[in-house]
Length: 264
Picture 1 (cartoon, rainbow, N blue to C red):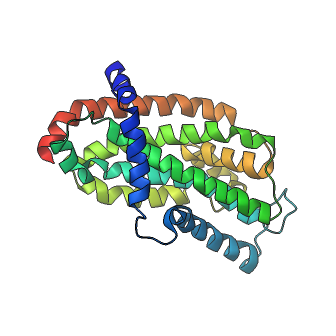
Picture 2 (picture 1 turned 120 degrees about the horizontal axis):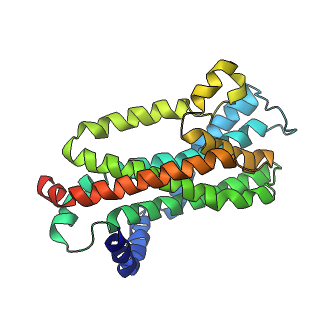
């Protein structure tokens, strides 16, 4: 583990320039450039918000704002998009960079760090756009929003741990790449992003709380919409699990790295 950390530090400038080039190359011939990074997820959120707030006239108890449900939805989607995008990028990370891993001599651990950095930049831009939408809708998050960097870090660490293991497994079993999107879709609907868990029968609540995304998404909604602190007790346990998954992810990657190059 110490060697991996030292390798990341020695190649920090390579990692930073790779993140910059990755973001630039995705929109090199686009008129709107990097704006597409936030337009896609923001449009998805706004469509949901329009349908729920205007068409279905959905209300959210505890908030006196016509667009309360839209605010709730955007807060949850900010967390979910960071988690899902990180998992998706890590899933095909080593397969997509097979030729690079064979031909260039560099610490392989740089690849997941670059992918995580790119995803984090995307999410920060999305968050800034959502803050702008909040202001337009007449909602201004309070001091509780200062918890966001910690929540984003925990979401990223959890997703990196899962993603690293899935990315390595996908090199040896390509079925993993087909199964994970289906599982992510199911997990999305098992997480209270577009609905309020209190709307469900109470005896289901305990099962939904076993979902690791439940305390994260609920904490995002608490700090951004309800001006409440995050679910600290639940997040403390989740931090332990996220750290454990991160360790397993790095360990799996390090053990499988030599064989991955042969398979790719």
